[in-house]
Image 1 (cartoon, rainbow, N blue to C red):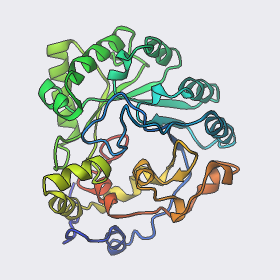
Image 2: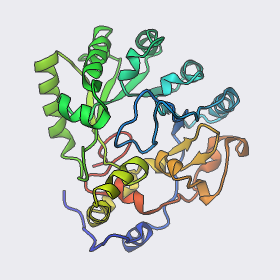
Image 3: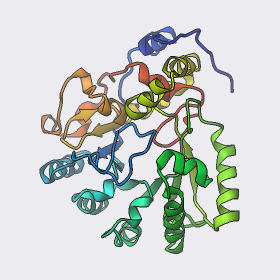
Length: 329
């Protein structure tokens, strides 16, 4: 499939690219996915993390925010999926309540798991709990070799991840024809676009099966977003301008109708609303203002509202596109 490449340069406004293709203003359709970021507490501090999560962070969702979210979810029948992320979302005291109640309301639930959290003290309950509630696991594994994973996520991360995947396979996750869905997430080590998702998935399946007898369902390829910790890496290596130019020059207008922000709302640990998790980390609120879950009667209230954009949005629209569900083309 061919797409038009704009003659863009570093610093080109994302809104100008949309306008040039008759796609401005960008507006939300019905909200079908509620993405909940329960905070920045994590057992890891990965180089590429756009959340800047880590063991020393203290931001974490309190009970009153979790309860308000569940009441809004019950009042929002169009939402079919609850996507729980962090940090390591499983470390939040409200995680089990959010999962259990969302499932009782008939919504699919995704846990964005870093895998290594399963080896943290006191987390022995996690695999069986996720299986009991048929939670879909979307797990970070930026490569199928130990060298690349440990370089990005810290020494020993690959070994722990492999043990976690084997444990999940043992209870049915990721196995052929299993309803316990297990997906993996790849993101480039450096300042480049992700490779073809289907070909890389085949590579992952071959290598993980042959070397570790590991099975999984799908691989999602994500572009590194030029914000927070990855932006600092780009600055240290003097590559921010080149990376932004790469993203802008590969703007793909065919991706725009499928952008995740068109059907998703992101909620921060403190109840503030955002168009996506990336805007959340930059504190770019819905309608560029601080709107919270207490300002809504239902997530349906957000339908047709304009979506706030900035230059980092080129990360989601470059090449085959990037989203929490992988490539968009």
